[in-house]
Amino acid sequence: MYGRPRVKKVFCKYHQNKKCEYFCRDHKVLLCGTCLRDKHRDCQIGDDHEYKNYYGKKIREVKVMIEANRNELVSQTHTVISALDSGISKLEKFKKDIDLVIERIGDMKYDVGIHKSEIERTTNALQEIDRQMTNAYDLRTCQQCYADIDLEKVKFERKQRKLYQVPTRLNDDVTASIHSLQRRLKNIKNGINSQLSSTKLAQYYPNARSFKEPTTPYLPYFELENKVTHKKPKDHARNQGRLAQWSNMEDVRFDLRFQSTRTPMTRLPTLN
Image 1 (spheres, helix red, strand yellow):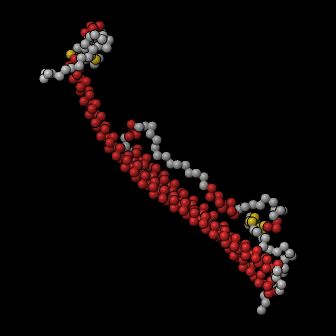
Image 2 (cartoon, rainbow, N blue to C red):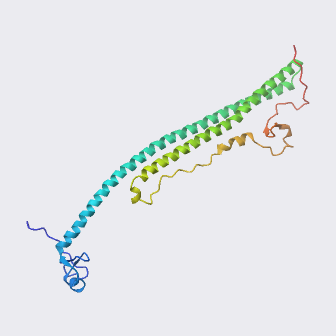
Image 3 (cartoon, rainbow, N blue to C red):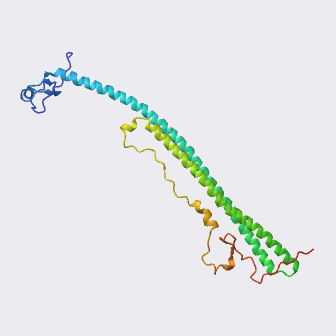
């Protein structure tokens, strides 16, 4: 009960009823008496205790190696976690900057809506002047209507120029912001990859995917200027009464419905 611990008996895998009592130093295997007599007669033979000492030493060496690798992996894991935390914080700030760009685009859209409302009000005012011109009954009223038309036309052209400038400004600002964000995202990716490649985890996980930069989708608002300022009519003959052709040979839609369909009157002199 208090003697030597019981040792598990090892039986030969070729001769199931034979115990392994010998150790072949040349082939590093346990042998029974039959295996020794048949196949290992010319080998250097030791007892089974030598087998235990040999493999016990191997097990201790492997244990030390595993412990060293485990400590190194734990250290490298902390480095990877730190790199990923840094990348996450940078990406969160990157997301905030993207939200600012989206908010800026929304502000641009709001400005375009305001210009659109002002142009609609100007169109309504011109239509009202057209109605007054139709019912004009004296010279002073006609002169006042012409003056109002000139004033509204100047306002309309000014608002039209502002409206055309919005897509250009939007295109430049958004393009610069997107390019800046793309450069920052590339720097974040390179920083994370450099920190990860400096660790030895790549040796253990050679098939692991690195941090990939997402592809930039097509941004349709980059073509907004062309859609607004370079709109070509389909038929010049049918739209001849509603088009104004400018000196740069670009056809721009210009609604002249507020003008009277009667023969245009000559410009009246200013009354003193």
